[in-house]
Image (tube, rainbow, N blue to C red; front, side, top):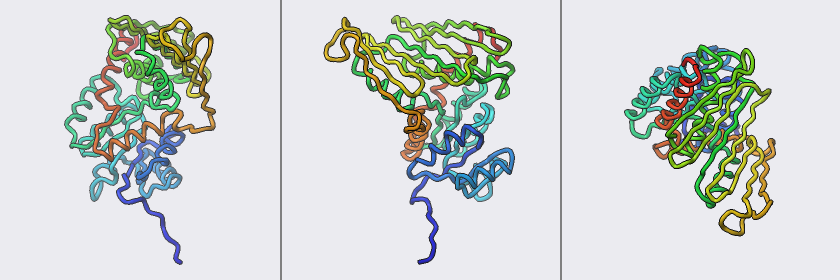
Length: 344
C-alpha cells in the first residue's frame, strides 16, 4: 500500500497563531494540540525564522512575518480562528481587524493597553458578524483544581470572602510598552487577580488600594474590594518572589473554607459549630492533590480555556470570557492606579 498523509478531520477548525514566543510554545500550543477537530494551519511572527521554525515544530503548513496575511491575504482568510500571544497593543490590533473580518480571536490577557482602547474593541465585538467569538485568555478560573474548589464549595452557601495572592519574580523592568514596572505588574498579575475576584463577587461598591515599595524595582499592591452586603475580596499582587506563587482562599456563609495552594493542593474545612451536619465536622479537612506531572495543561487552565473558546466557535458563540467582561477589570485597575500614583 502506498504511504498516505493524515489530514484533519472533516470540518476541522483552522487555527492561526500570532506570536510563537515561550508562553505560546510552553502552554497554548500544547493545549491547542489536545483539541479535537482543531488544526494549527498557520504561524505568524515578526521574525521570519521564528515563524518558520514554529510552523515546522508544530506542523503548520503556512507561516508569515505579517500577521495580516492570515486575515486578508491572497485568496481570503487562511484561518477560521486566531490565537494571539504578544503585547496588549498587538492583541488590540488583531482583535479589531480579526473580529471585523468575521474571524474569531482568542487573545491572551490583557486584551488592550488601556481602558479607552478596550471600550473601542467592545464596540467592534458587538458589531462583529454573527457567530464571531472574542475570548480573553484568563487561565486561572479555568484550572481543574480551581473548578474543583468551586464545585466543592457551591453546595455549602454563598461566598462571603475571597483572598487571592499572586506574586512572581516578574516583571523586573517595564514591559508591553508600559512606562513603569508598577503598571506592567498591574497589567500582568493585577488583571488576573481582579478578574478572578469579579467573576466570583461582582463589581465592588468600594475600592481601596495601597502600594509598598520594597526596593528600587520590587513592588507589592494590596487591593480591598468591598460590597454593600458586607462581602470582601482582598488581593495581593507583587513582583518580589523568585517564582510564581498563587494562593486562593474562599469562605462561604456556612463557614466552609476552601484554600487552593498554587494549582496543586486544595484543602476544605468547616468549623464544628457551623450550620448543617455530615460535612467535615470538628478539625477534619478534605484534601485533594494534583501532582505537577499530571494533567498540567488542564490543571493550569490553558487546555480548558482553549476548549471553551473552541466550543464557542463551533456552536457559533457566544464565548464565556468576552471582551465586554474585561471592562470592569480595567476600571478597577484604573482606580488602583489613581490611588497608588501609578501612571497608566
